Length: 301
Image 1 (cartoon, rainbow, N blue to C red):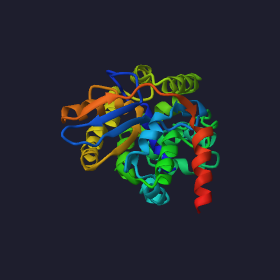
Image 2 (image 1 turned 135 degrees about the vertical axis):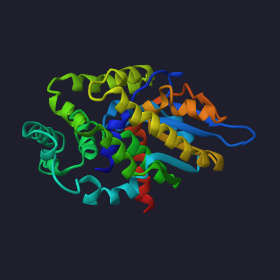
Image 3 (image 1 turned 120 degrees about the vertical axis):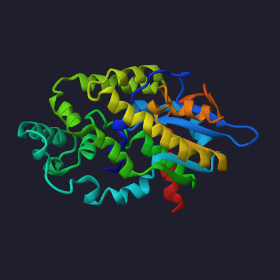
Image 4 (image 1 turned 90 degrees about the vertical axis):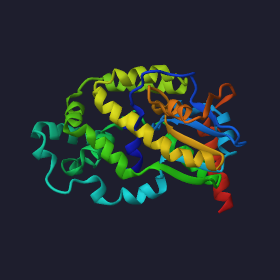
């Protein structure tokens, strides 16, 4: 459940897009060290793993790895029912029974066996659960989870920029209105959009990702601003001490790199030089890196 929270956050609003790159160099004179920022995505799809090895090489040069949340500690937190379940009442108190049944059916399709929990789940946690699509089955794990594991194997200091409770609180701003829209979406548009998003991410096409977020029917612009802009400010404030302390590799949702309040823009406003890192050979990270560091890790143990 802990990694489901990041899925909705890959569909954030974007108004402007800088150079087309998922990888960015972050520096500020007179400091001699350099940090990096990488736009990730929470999808278990092999297509998104065809990336430039430059990113993993640069990650290995940094002593700190920062993700949106600390995945290891979040695992324990998400096992606590109080984190994801309503304290009192059920969704039947907020939505009509037909809508709740649709949500249960959708949950069972996304995560078999989870439908019985739906009526008592908090809106944010349920929205995250329902954002998981059937397409996500061609890779052993999602991109953000892979990078966390890669950094852990490299023995980097692991940091989360947000708490799970904070992400859930933001997702809860969708409220029952967002769940109603999810229940009413009975078209194949979502699957088509997911395929388009996967291709855009693999091509580092931030402009298309931003355009898709703006045109999404699942959230209105106010909700998108809450889910993106406000969180960008918070993440940057928590990022700054890490960047000032030494070489840091930051991996956050790709759409946080776009928009009028993008992380890139906020860092520049605070005096940092942020430049795209382009070029470099591509490979299938699943084949060339997941197996490699897991095999080496088993040998080490």
